[in-house]
Each structure stands twice: as structure tokens, then as C-alpha cells.
Image 1 (cartoon, helix red, strand yellow):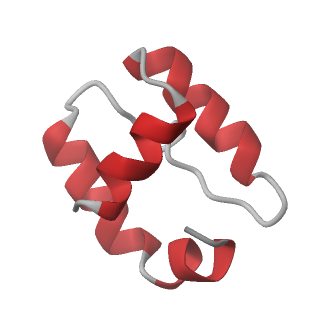
Image 2 (spheres, rainbow, N blue to C red):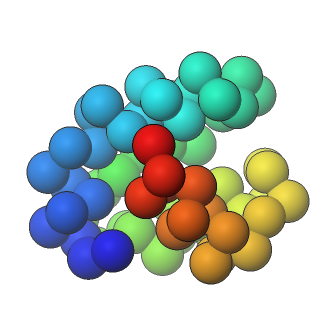
Image 3 (cartoon, rainbow, N blue to C red):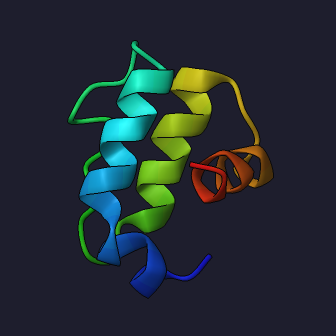
Length: 61
């Protein structure tokens, strides 16, 4: 998944992630330019998932 794909429909993906993982907050899902890796790091810690697992989850939404 590249940054353009992620950024293009991020609001929709963010809503689906919040439905699936109720513990996520808007701050956890803040997608800022150049901060993709930081966001994935926060999600890895919060959800206890690997980076690959997170990519699969997001792609499957």
C-alpha cells in the first residue's frame, strides 16, 4: 500500500478502523504528511500487531 492510496481514502478507512478497534482515537489515526511510519508505530503499540498485520487489516477494509 502506498501513501497515495492510503491518503486518498483515509477518512473512510479511519472510520472502519475505529469501528473494528474501539480503543483507537482520532490522535492514534492522525495521518500527517511524512508521518506515516509514526502513525503505524502508534497503531502497532496500541493494537499489538505487526506492521504487516496492520497493512493487511487496512487493505481488507
